[in-house]
Image (tube, rainbow, N blue to C red; front, side):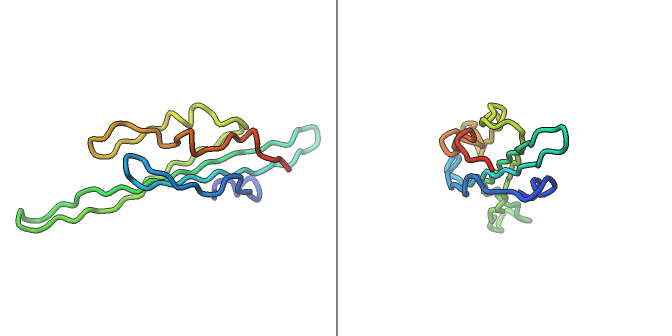
Length: 120
């Protein structure tokens, strides 16, 4: 939630939730930061979600007799918005591992509605 720090001190509103995408471990966390109201303005809340998934990609060997070892990669997506409801655009991010079907990177069942959070 480093990106939120430019607006103020972020508050975690959903602790990291672990889940899987096509059998690969993943996690998501959601935070927010309140930008205080300036004269003549209304306070704003910025919401951010960060989801990361781990995937293995077969390594290349120099010769056909050398064993190949998988290389672990971590893919992360940051999503930032001023909308309090979980935006539908967030659910349009998809990922595909190997030849598995496309799956949402942000599954709806692991994200609480941001409308239910307490605002300070």
